[in-house]
Image 1: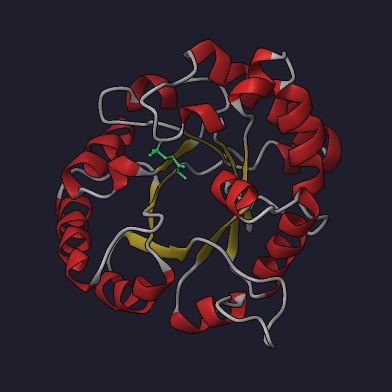
Image 2: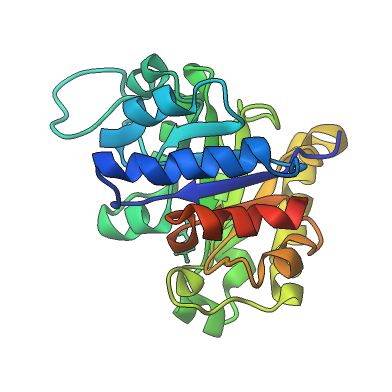
Length: 252
Ligand code: 13P
């Protein structure tokens, strides 16, 4: 089955209680505007997940979290478990974002275990992969992204129903730089081929593969039209409802 597209917003470490007004504005645009042929997701900081789930209840906007621990409970100060996110009624958890790989030394093996924890709770895991500028310049993009990160971060129990892949070149995040559409298509097509090889034709072709890194209303339509791109993972431009809605427009 063809993947269902998703436009997802990652708010990162942004947002306080009053930011709920942006979510309310977005819900209005998504629910009352032209229907988009994609799912819509906002992942606020953990402090806002409960509030956002309540506000988004019954709307077309889904809510998720940005990270979780591998364990279900225990002595892990500051961490949150996937079952705690599930308990709030959120449906998705991002794992392996490059900022967590860089800031917290997360390896693909750890990301694999985190994704496994997400799937155990019957939530959807959004597993992020992406090369640094140095890796791209060295010609190592596919080796890093596909042969290493994708192969090692995606657990055996992944299916198109419970797992989404997000390709986010590190050098494109928050910089205003984006790869060319051809470059995006090349990496996404290589990711698709690896998923087909590992999971078989029917299953491998069903996974949604998001692009992330400086997606804006002005470039979304072009990027979303690239081969094997099934949506976007958006940072900065997801913080304002009008900008994010302008990206969702790529699916209207
Ligand atoms: P920007 O859209 O701000 O470049 O961030 C992308 C990202 O990291 C989403 O997870």
